[in-house]
Length: 281
Image (cartoon, rainbow, N blue to C red):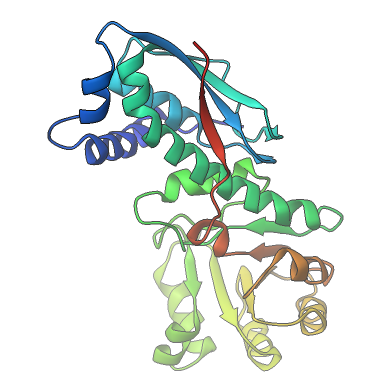
């Protein structure tokens, strides 16, 4: 898969290193480890999962000490098992130890996002539906987290409010209804901007079908209601299901015929994938 540009990654990794090293640097390592000591360490998976964030780990060490050489990094999207070596790093021991936590924080978190995504993507692979992320991301990490979703086999929803129009329930309430909201949106945005509308009932869907949109977000509907909604749409717009999606309920929801299933917890509540650092020499 395509890597994120260094221009995107570096400010985030630099900020994390500055936060960790603070004003005085690594007091523990500087007190214990000789300045000329060299070492080799390995990033090792402790559990099954999907790797993401490897370039963040590389950059964390390279920014601490450019003499550190990171080799044999698995590409993002790689499946790992307990004991799989994700990559190795060799160089000044002080730099390796000082950059360890930041490297592992990025790698573990983003691999957790990718792994969580894969659980849904694998479960619904027999259907046409795709799992997608949302804007429920950790502030500052959106680009990295959405990259990790793709690494896990998912798709990206909009990156921000300026990507597309998504008319949600509060927009509809303030605007005075679906027809008023969609009509105003069509008059405001350019012809290349997609419009999606959230509905939570089949009655709202009927109103939306009359005014038209590019996609419909079917919120908190069960599989049977989703199946009816998909039939009503009849291919006239993209159908997206959302609301309390777990790996278990994702299967019947995907089997309803929707095109997308959007899942917020992929990013806002991702469980860290356990990846450790082992000293090799």
